[in-house]
Length: 329
Image 1 (cartoon, one colour):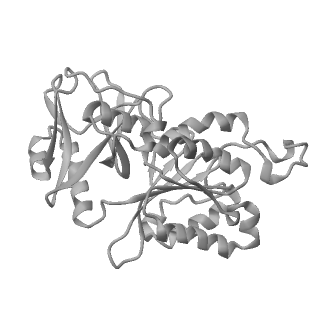
Image 2 (cartoon, helix red, strand yellow):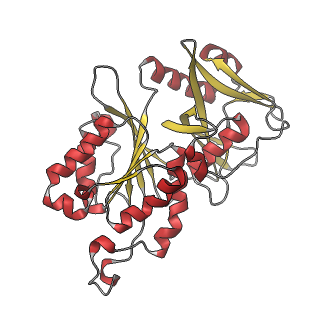
Image 3 (cartoon, one colour):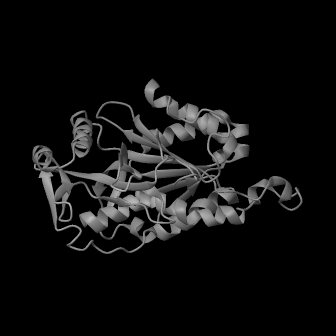
């Protein structure tokens, strides 16, 4: 699991954007005249920006491409000239179209000045190894190439999202309000743009939710902005889970089996234990060790991302995970 809460003075994000051209794996690299180096597009997180939103913004500014994120590649850590520590997180990523609906939840950005980036090239893995200046970048490239060789580079993100902070049960109509109508608290509503920006970074195009208000309200604005159908299932409510946990688990398993496009499921805390135990059936022991381990599993508004790959003739498999928390986006 890639935990985004890391201690560093400076945070940044980047990606290895890849494609297959005439049967060969290629990656996008950029040249920075200030440093006279070739590297992967990356940049620093801005105030109020999530790590993933930073990544997709920098990929356009430096790489001139809109992307959606795939599986994580990990961190690079080093000390900059003034002695401060810097942590840069990288993902695998692919180019998406300029009219992709997920761009509607991303701020408009401009290309970097030529004084910052003066060349952009798609190159083979062999060419990239020769051109990349940083040995850490070459290590990232080796990891990506290994995923490709093993058929584990093409993945779909499935995000388990606990609804944003809701009004307390005892305060909702003096404790007498119906659970299915309990709304988001003001702090929960404030979190929604950050949630949307992270969903958009993964290119989420399928939205599934409990029909109870606090879950639907967590994802409805994103669904509307990106024209993604918002589908609800009674079995995903707290009550549906209690009445028929087997049916609930089957719904989660069916989503994994059928996932083709990036998808989010917005759920309630009491359902998360069974959700994760169901997902564990699709993962190796080493991957399961990265799952949340104890109640409350996820805090309100937190997300657990599983990256799912399938090979012809084989069952779906979770290859990697990420935890996105409110402590550090």
